[in-house]
Length: 211
Length: 218
Image 1 (tube, rainbow over the protein chains, first blue to last red):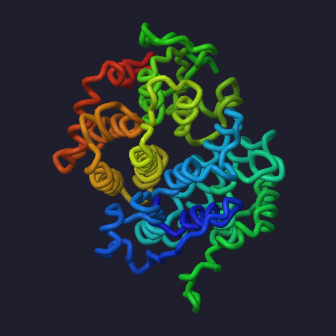
Image 2: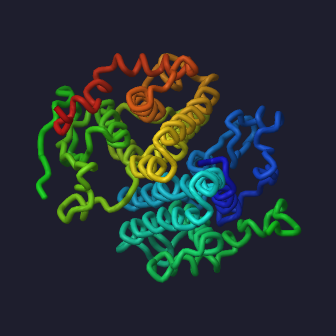
Image 3: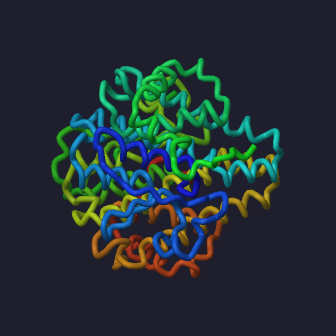
């Protein structure tokens, strides 16, 4: 789901990667509900982040943004030429964006906490992450190199990197069951493009972290 | 476990598809429905193999599990689009293309995952039956309102103009299922209602509907 912080890193990552595309960062505080402000609603009536503005083209949704960037700025492609490998990238992206992320976003977790029980929140999210990560381990088996589908960063990595990071830092997922994803996580942590995109490095990262 | 390998009555005027396409599908699944619709739009014939999700056939050992281990089904349309470019599912115009991708994503990320039977069952068990319905309605309506806004500047006979594109492939099954399963009030969504009427008139859509599939319940 787009109205959550988790997907913002995806758009940032590609922006500062080998593409080397410069961009202006505009913060939208989701906790404060700034996505519903008149100014932002005029820009994107759906109230979702991330939103990319390129001249008079306005695009929301991380997948749509990435595909737009891929076409408009073809340097350092985000997808391999090989059709099968390309499909693997799409599948990996889809597992994250459809099978994991929508079930771990703030709104859903709040619902579980309030309507079911605070104790159910973590088991719920670990279940869905675990299911998705198990699928990813199998999907990428035989395709992964240094990165998810070879030795270059592609679309799958853009979706995987923030997701794995969140699983570890926010949800305490036991990564020992996911050796391939663990290895990818190490590789991502060495990339300046990924490090620059991390939440802690963004202009709107809270100065005093809210406990 | 046996799978039903049955031929589906598909478009007889299809251009040649060099290698044989096999679709593993469950008749009721909205994700499977999207792909069936897309295959029909592209005039691609395929062999239908049913996987009974209710019986858990997707987990049993056998060819399906070995072939398809992921939990999501959405991106086959991108693959189809590239390998079989006839009747393009994405318009050339970058803005319209982006709208199609956004529409597809709203459905596949913001609506469908929260309608999964496993999730609804969890809500029903842990919170209650009424809550299950209000959860389902909440997320469908939220997504549908977003879609109404997304499409308002470019809607024509179909979602983004006068031809069927990816947005329609995702939308039509989603609307159909929302009407059938949760009795959604479509009067709140005039644009989507119009698009849905247009899609319903298409033989390609009719042929893809759950009731017409080999594994549909009698």
